[in-house]
Image (cartoon, rainbow over all chains, first blue to last red; front, side):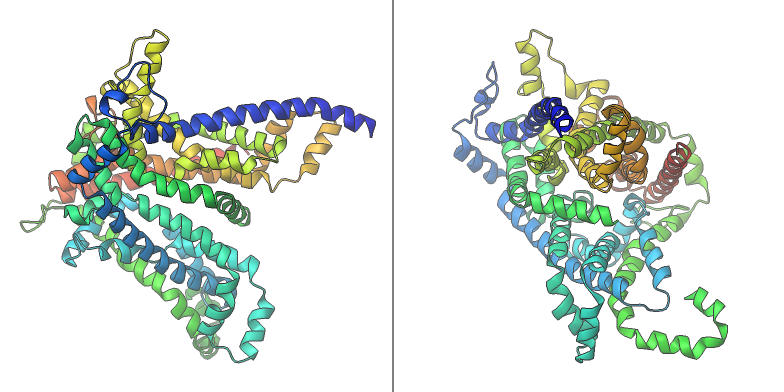
Amino acid sequence: MITVKLRKKPFNTTSFLVHLFMGLAALVFLFPFYWMIISSTMSLAQLGQFPPRLVPGNHLISNWNTLTSMLPLVRGFFNSLFISTTTTALQLFFCSLAGYTFAKYNFPGREKLFITLLATMMIPSAVGLIPWYIMMSKFHWVDQYQALIVPSMVSAFGIFWMRQFITSSVPDELLQAARIDGCSDFGIYWRIVVPIILPGLGALGIMTFMGVWNDYLAPLVIIRTLTKYTLPLIIGVMSSNLGTRVHLQLLGATFATLPVLIVFFFASSRFISGLTAGAIKG
Amino acid sequence: MAVVTKTKRTDWPELWHEVKRNRWAYLFIAPFFIIFAVFGLFPPLYGFFISFFKWDLLTPMSYVGLSNYVRIFSDNLFWLSVLNVILFTIAEAVPEIVIALTAAYLLDTYIRRLRSTYLAAFFSPSVTSSVAVSLVFGAFFGIHYGIVNAVLRLVNLEPVRWMEQPTPMKVVLVVLLLWRWLGWDMVIFLAGLQTISHEYYEAALVDGANRFQIFIRITVPLIRSVMLYVVITATIGTLQLFAEPRLLSNELGGRANSLLTPVMYIYQMGFGYFRFGYASAIAYVLFILILGASILNLRFLRQSE
């Protein structure tokens, strides 16, 4: 006992040093966000001060008015919100349904189909970019949101993720009992499985939403009209439209990242633990 | 399906019965396979087809045989873009994996309280828009308003024209990528570390091993599969870089094309010059390079086992 206690003392010093180091590193990591936010509240003159100003300025409102008079930022926010929400909802439904099937049904060809599904994740998306665009133009889907939503309504990763989650969290007995009670195949999924897998759906939902919200290449290729631009597209044209007005560019960047950051910090502990749980099983 | 029919050739009726009994299962997984066939599988196949044509989408396509592929061999700009991403991959992935693994090990070994707070801070850059953070980094390292140069001036160093010179531009991009993905890798490594029982560590401590020896001899070998996953996803992701270098270089690749990447080049060829056949051929060469890099990673990490 005594030796154990003696050993613990230097251990605590190390632990303190690790805390100190991690704390400082965390602040360094967050600093670009802090600088982005305070810079977006400054005038250009305040931003150019030397030594640099590290507290917020007082030009947020006028910056906002200038920026939104030049670019449809709020419109872009709602465009992104619409695409992300629709895609996420569709993906949660189709991925959990297929994930449930791969986890709990024993049908001929299951292994083959599942391996095929995993193999599809190996195809790099850039390979299909040009032909995908040509296809969209043949469908007359250029400048239409369905070009972004329909191809992403179900994903191999999402199915894989839900299968892992359902295998470990939904007991077979429960499904058998429901079947004996005369529940239909879809009824079992909808009324028994879905309520159990809500945490898994939450983590997949956050990942999907963020992926779609931040996507740049697909909207860049598809969307033409400024009023249909997603938020990343608007942020993307800011550097050429606003030139050297860095404070306005940073306000745009703040507008695009801050809501996501706030949601993330509130959900982070559950999200990260969901992510690590999934990774362990995988 | 094919295998089942081969091994149980006599059981056709039974197989059909099984398939019929599971008809709902096929219906439930059908959406993925339909969507994938149309939007995931068809485009690459179609791309292979049009890579043998000259086509600007406005005039009829004309067959040119292998000449698109032949031209790639002497296209210095394309190979420069490949060299660029190989450089970015090495410059980013190596420090990222070393730092992320070390940090995850420290968190796993020494820290209980506040662990998720630290993780949230490190992870936060991964959840934000690549376009927005590229813009922030461009401004951060900017010549007039950037805080990095302001700090350099404070300590009496010459300000650097970060965004205008080839090597500093590359440095900024690599720093951005490190900042953006370090937390992601840390979380994945931490998940792997949590599967290792601490009894191994205690046994090694009793045998007189120090923490560093434990890390190298026990931890690293045990999470080799996690490492493989991180290395392969980092490689595939970096080889397909697009948004960050495009935004940092005002869309064109920057001075001396120092930030030009293959996907930027494909985009330029297709949507800038309307050379869709040539762009598709480049995409295929890139695909083969990515495949080769993944196989190389697998080989290398298997061999070191």
